[in-house]
Image (tube, rainbow, N blue to C red; front, side, top):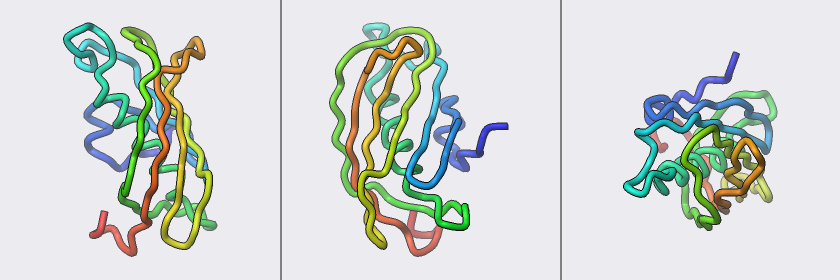
Length: 132
């Protein structure tokens, strides 16, 4: 059983949370025609959503395994390649964390291991769910 995203946008796009733990996260997406741009490749906004979610979720789990909330303060993406079919995987890890701010990095790869994009982000943990 896959963990729940608890995120309507990710669910609507077909993005699945396949792994989440303290300091790490993986999302997958099976590419469909609705995910493509006019050139027939994965839309940059879909890639950005995958990378943002992976980086953000990587820092949400506390010592007890409970999932908190956070907001993105900054996200930098480098687009490195193109993909039109198959499955992509966004794999993220926390690179540094304080009490309320954490930094994550991620890469978006195809099933064959080709790197499509990378991201680095800064996130702020929310005190409660109303802030996210």
